[in-house]
Image (tube, rainbow, N blue to C red):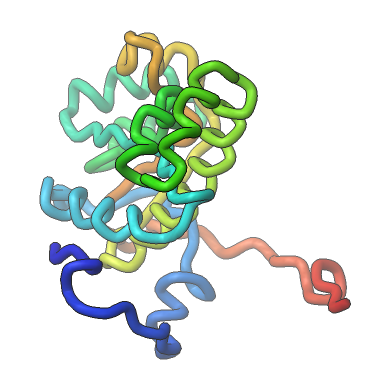
Length: 208
């Protein structure tokens, strides 16, 4: 995928059509099963090529992704999922383990050159470093789910797992910390359950 910053000047956003909004938001839902069609390496790379662009605090970009595709890897990952998530994870064509990088600050000179001097501060202060890692990684996770949908794939994000066991198996050096697992595949009949209600504007929105 072309680097957007190398392809010409940045442009103002344009409104998406109704079909695109349905795909990303209004008719999208969590997928619980998938077609048997494999998800290719190129498709997974394309997800990240989209998800990496939206903003994080000072462009820190602390989220990391492990794509688990092999049957052996998904079976091992399934061992660490809660009972209601095990079968879904094992059966999914691909699974993304989203993690925050505890050493994200080591890349500040690359991602945010004008704040390179902050590298030593974050290295010496665990609380603000890990707080920034977790908050921004959750922000990036939302972008990641939208990227999956934008490419015509279905996403099944899950929070039911033992993060410590996943980390011990897949990230034994302790640098990455799992915070979300997302099943990924091509949608099929039966992928989606009926959407549950959303709260209305009167319950959620105020203007000042």
